[in-house]
Image 1 (cartoon, helix red, strand yellow):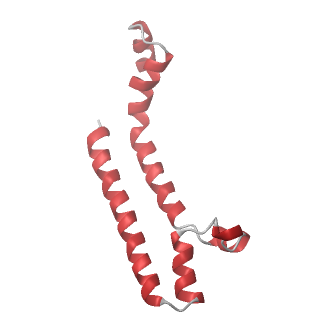
Image 2 (cartoon, rainbow, N blue to C red):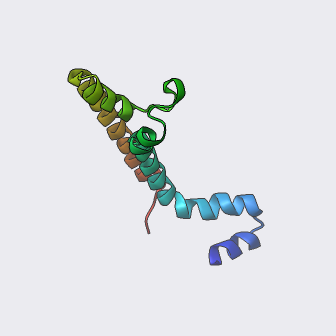
Image 3 (cartoon, helix red, strand yellow):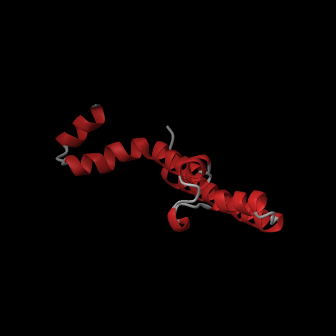
Length: 109
């Protein structure tokens, strides 16, 4: 409340108050929730398998669904292993990027 009042006294409009007061306070939460939702989306399998089974013309298949399909249904474990390693590298890189961004833009007091 004090920050908003000080920004208002300094002549900041609503957008400037959001950009310079609110956003720095919630940056760490936004970065973490963005990373977690991205990882959960990449690993989404159960909903797709139960509701659509890959959907019309394979439109709802994700990488994790292809891994399941190759390993369990088609018996191509080597292809599924390579896909799983690719998924691991993607998630690892996203996590590293998030940690680098957190060091640059999040400042704890």
